[in-house]
Amino acid sequence: MKLTNLEARRLWLHTHGLSAAPTGPLNVMATINALGFVQIDTIRNVTRAHHHILWSRNQNYREKHLWPLLKSRQLFEHFTHDASLIPMQTLPMWRRQFSRMEKYVAKAEWFASSLGQQNIRDIKARIEAEGPLSTHAFDTKIEGKREMWSRPPHKKALDKMWYAGELATSHRENFIKFYDLAERVFPADLHEGHRPDAEQIDWLCSQALNRLGFATANEIAKFWDAVSTKEARAWAEGRAEVEIEAADGSVSRAHKAPNLAPAPKPSSRLRILNPFDPAIRDRTRLERLFGFEYRNEMFVPKAKRRWGYYVYPLLEGTRFVGRIELKADRKAGWLRVTGFWQEDGVSWSGPRQAKLDAELVRLARFVGISDVKWAAD
Image 1 (cartoon, rainbow, N blue to C red):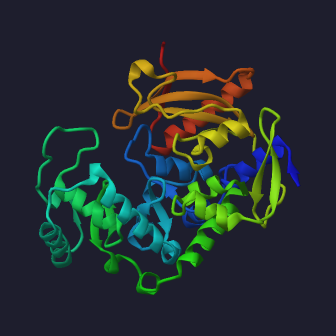
Image 2: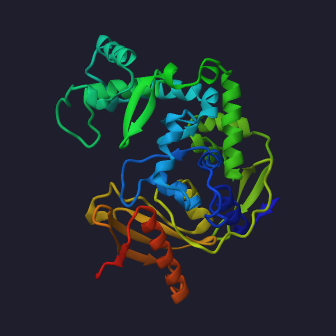
């Protein structure tokens, strides 16, 4: 079996919920289930990444729709490739990830805590007695030089227990995480059972491949980041493969999902995608399939940036046609386009500009902004 580049693009966008027009009845849990998880991020350039990702798939979504799903235990929060909200039904297959992250944190030099084991037990005892607590309930201070990722000892202790699955996110208030005992957050029927490790690997790999459509062993491993490439390679051995044509015409092989089928022609709507959108998370795969080079430059010094601080890819149909930098002040009620770059070979016609203007208005309306302008420069 061979997929042309156009077929591969269509399939990739379809499996990531970016094929159909983002309209119709809203079911947030169905969207997250289809994606597998949704990454959460603290930066609120226009809206936070998790909200933008869900809005891109259904523009009836509003920011108020997400966090009640965490509080009602339909979702839990943990670490995939980054902090994410994951369907609660995944929990029985997540035991190995708690163990993997516990070992990772124990070895990570930047996670070393100056608190002793008794202090850590005291923190956990306070949560047990008082209920969910945020990091603001504790008062240890950062010791030594303040670096970008410096954390006070109590925060490291809380996160150490959170990564290991001893604590869980009870809820968030204004994006502040509240920690509680795992057994008080996770449903007992999902939390107490222990599935064999091989069963967890099989489930994680098969679910990753189903959501990717086609993938190498490395791409399967990177999906949840809960199995190693070696484990994914052993799981995928002997499974059916498909040839994939890249944007440059070269052909490579990948494992194919059992349910692989031709994807429909996508909507021609122009979408402003978030830098953390799962469809563009794997930058190597993005460039191979779409010929679109994209890097997140938020943590690159300003003088060394090629594009800008928070730059959004522009997707039209099966093609990335440009990128745009936006700034917003929600309190003042304005959104500004501060940078715009069309892709090489893309003719920026009047109808295409009208599509972009319409999407800017929709994005601004989503966060309650009515004043949308392009900066003079």
